[in-house]
Length: 299
Image (cartoon, rainbow, N blue to C red):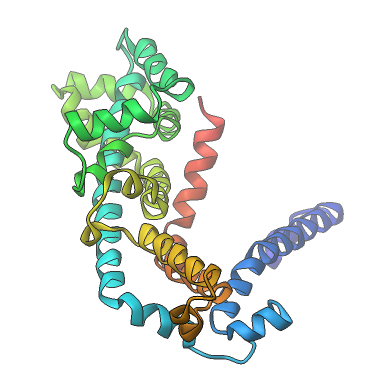
């Protein structure tokens, strides 16, 4: 590192140091709310109410997690399983569909590429509305109360598709030409050449899709009526609503007996929900940054 810095002038080194300090300070600012949430989840409700939030737990306790897990521990584990299944399979399906569509409108020689690109772009500007979408999903496609219903509506995000298209356009046209000379068709070119050369772009959109599937509670809210299919985000949303109801109706004898935590429960739910994503993100961060840069400068 020291040798690399010696290659720059004094002014450049000062500018690099400033950028490092700025990025570090910005990262700490972004981590600050997460640290507060983590600290509050291990604090007592009384301490949070009287003294506010802090970077370190006030009166450290596991009462909030005990309260939440004692209510529906088996359902929370089931919701975790459902969320993991939907995220893994949904991400895989979405990446394949998105990459295929991006390949079609980016491969050299396809004369209808602009028409397909406009068709996808048009859906970003206009949609049929929530009621027609709901009728289509439940009455005609039969997606209600199924895991497939939590995957199919998000099978392709147009923004991710265009991001992938921009990345595929960095592949030289000579590679396609030489592949066709060797007798490869479009299917073989896509799976044997384009996919291996597009790992950075694929990982980038895969991260976007994984975050979307993991954080989604809109589809369960609209399409699910069976508790055993609830995702983690939707279950935490319902638990928070129940706790809020108990707190609001404090005159109820049962609510006064239970004394449910409100602020600490919110923080504990945040910790439970973001835990798996935080563990996965460091392993794909380098691909994510490279994919964003390439997708932004090429088009």
